[in-house]
Amino acid sequence: MAKEPRPGRARRPAVRSPGSWQAMKISPHDVFGQRLRLTLPLHGRHGLMSAPSIFRFVSMAGRRPSAPSTLSARTWLTAMLLACLWACPGPDAWAGAPGASQERFAAIVIDAQTGETLYARHADARRYPASLTKVMTLFLAFDALEAGRAKRTDRIIISPRAAAKPPSRLGLAAGSSLTLQEAMDVLVVKSANDVATAMAEHLGGDEAAFARAMNAKARRLGLAHTQFRNASGLPDSQHYSTARDLARLGRAFLKEHPGDYAIFGQQQTLFRGRVIKGHNRLLAEPGIDGFKTGFINASGYNLLTSGLRDGRRVIAVVLGGRSARTRDAFMDRLIQASFSSLAIRSAGFEVAVSDLLAPSPVKPSDSAPIMLAAAEAAPSAGIAQVRPVSAPASVDGGAATPPPRQWWIQVGAFRSKSTSLARLEAVSQRHPRQFGRRASDVTRTGALFAARFSARSAKGASAACAVLTAEGEDCLVLLE
Image (cartoon, rainbow, N blue to C red; front, side, top):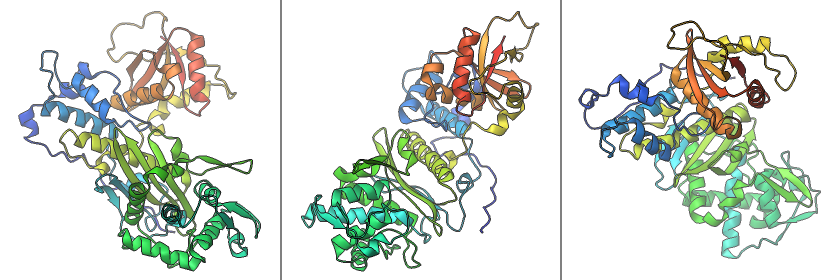
């Protein structure tokens, strides 16, 4: 088994903008001053800002009250620096792909409109596409429908050869049938290999002929490093593609069949009274709306996906994950970093996706020193019966602690103030009913910065805390 690559040295984002930093006279006050002590409008679980969020934030943070309303280069650079600080750039984008084997890993993100490559790692290396193959199978099916060579009501017969295909499969017996529309839905959601083979036999006469049609289509689309040998993506040493070709395949489908793209957004389908649920968990994430997962032992866990935000669409491919969970986590970060990069670039600055691609700001190791104490004090039962403890001293220090009078809900303690602010925003966005309207505060406690929300009573604090503990997250009720 190939070893995972060693992380390299962390580097700061490369910023290319007119003038020098000294000429712009950006002081620490601009970035860390009192005016910026507020919860940033971050997007998603990884603390990355969307375009509207950047516009709203910089209009407040980038100028003093007496400054003009127009946004200057200095203002934009301040906003960009904040975005990059929140991202805490990793040593290399590849290092941010835990759970992937380097000999199988590949990834790419492209702008769906222009085709521009926003991020690429091993994007032209030959890889096994696994069930991402079925995107091309469906491409040819929609081509046939558009050309009048097929109808959605056509009956697809399951041949003995199709019925014998290994999982994943629908499991229909040889000689049974389903409509072409049913077959397409099942192919997306279930990734059924028996259905893929039966569809290929129906549309191409036999699977070998259909594979030749797939290759002819690939050449027309400019997929120069792709070769198909079957309609399902089952193992074959001569069946291969690249991350770049698969991204181009997704982009071509969006261009040629925009009205049919919604089929790839299905999270489940109803087949003869049976609900079949899909494997693509990222479809539940805001803005991510389609395409396909794939897995065979030779490929690892693959994913072709697309997302839309603020009118900009990106297409991304990740190949070679060691698990669906780590693949999805890396893809989610990759998509969010790509949108943040596009938003910053729209302001006239260049920031690479790899510079914004970083681990989640919520690091368990950061919060361990304070959260372990909470875990030991808390009972092991379900809904938290939270025992109040004394709060840490304020960052301002000073006189003796006043008598207890304020309840707090502590949701983490981190080594940096910015990480604590990001944690507060993430919790507030994920649980707006419990935390959205609460006042928040970051208080220094030793070497850590505690992230906490205010509460009016012990009962209210405990109820809110229980929501987080039910999800396996740490939470502590404090009385100050």
